[in-house]
Image 1: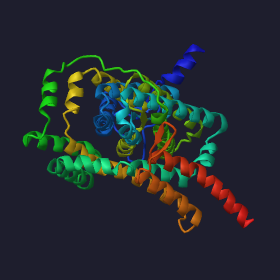
Image 2 (image 1 turned 90 degrees about the vertical axis):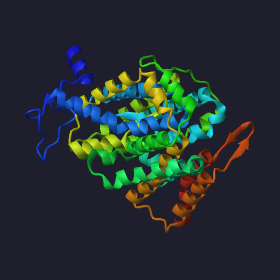
Image 3 (image 1 turned 90 degrees about the horizontal axis):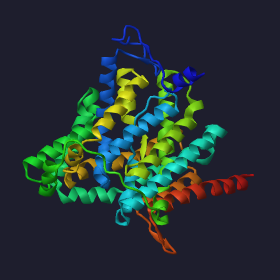
Image 4 (image 1 turned 45 degrees about the vertical axis):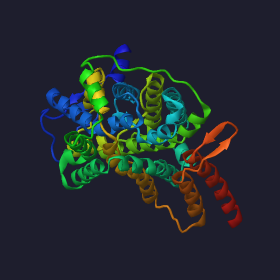
Length: 427
């Protein structure tokens, strides 16, 4: 019995073919692997793929980079264990947290970490509900119209923040933006998938050559030690900060479920029975991150791209990626290097990134074929978007709530109510 349970969590991957090649019409399944040198190489490639996005989140929000990387690697290991090696995935920093963390920067990191932790708890409970009731419960609570609107308003809410960072160093920002666009559009293969990372590197080099780096941060880089423990910080809880962050749950659910569906489609294996486990694992990883000082986690589209390009879905490669991230998290020098990235570079990168989050909501609408000729769909989505993009801010008692909260709560409540009234009128 012990052996059976052990294999559930630590699969003994069978070698695919000769362990060296993958036939054009074949895939390396999650419970298979190539030779270990090739598996390590693919695992390292997954680390490279997630680097740009995962490290950009703490750079923008001011969270410790090495701490975020530590909980990213730890979260990936938790995910692989919870899904029993059936879903290949890397848990990196979620961009959905950028907006609420930026909006609550004045409340301090401890309060922000408390909000991250609460989001993780709620996500875990959603996963538990899905596991008990089935994945159909998600479709009932968050239909595509609602999910798309919330995703869009979270991304577009930070448009002004990206513009402010851009205006701080317009030349550096423009070089970064052009590099991101050119690499993403014109460069084939894996490098093209790393457009954000390459753009940040190009922008940083340009800033260094032109003297646009912060001298104090450069001095801190020089004095940082090569090896050291990540910086762990405990959370505190403020209702206003928690309420601003709660809508992120919707985005995390959408990203997680989308990842599971994508892997199922690419491998030809149904994974609906572990969708709840995947959500619970993501929630648990986010709880740990909030409890210790890291950014909230999510499944990564970048790694989906790597799997699609290599046709290797082996979870063995993700164990390599998780171990690599954990090793790098114990280098303060690496964290100090990330914090030398100037505002102009962040502005050039986030001008694209925030827009991508917003357009992801539009993509959800497109794929679901939402009909915006219907007044119900048009009106509720319009009100939610303007509340989010305009950052509608109202105070209830001592709690100040911003546009992300009002837009998200508004459409979550208004859509089912108005839909019921509309159906009643037709009857």
